[in-house]
Image (tube, rainbow, N blue to C red; front, side, top):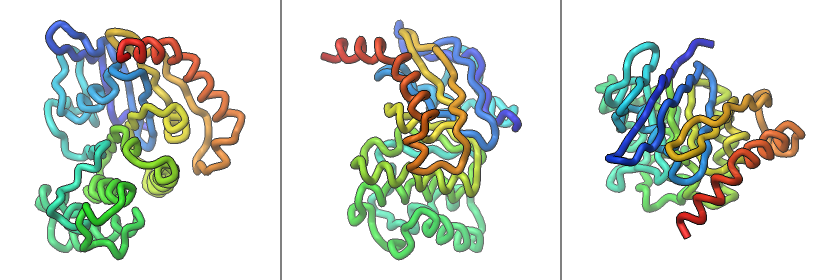
Length: 257
């Protein structure tokens, strides 16, 4: 598979604070790369750099060989806190990206219902965000991101604001959607279990400034299911990631307290 996203010697600083430095990372087409690390290690900053929302102080990001210097066509972002327009109903929220791209009316009328149905929101097209549960709002956000048919999907802790049961349902729904239409995906999460379940590779960030400590091949084939959570390989990888992060996580918690 070809490299879709290439991060080379990337660094971000805010004044005297270096968030991360010397980051080298590739995301191949039809691959999910999960990013984990302790709080404050720059996971979201790295993701924002890939989408062009945070400017690098050093290094480069390219998508399909083209340098990223700002918001990039073909790249969609799913936020932690839904990011829906409260005055727009589900249909118009999902259609927003397509309208921004000035897609033909016929294409909008074809794709919006398709993706609303894909995420399980058929029948809720006219509902406003406040009329939806948190899980349903995130489904709408996911449909909006997918409707523009991106080549790269970036997900910033997309299920962290949702209760545990709904979170697990959405994890497997996301895998089902990706397995039917695989694209390059970068998935930022605080959850080690989620990182291993979703990812083909898990990138572990550590240190101050942050750097890539290890990249782990998950080695679990798709499609994945709840049985994946019980597999010896899943248990092995999650235990290994936790061992890598344990000291940094404890140190970060002490700083906060």
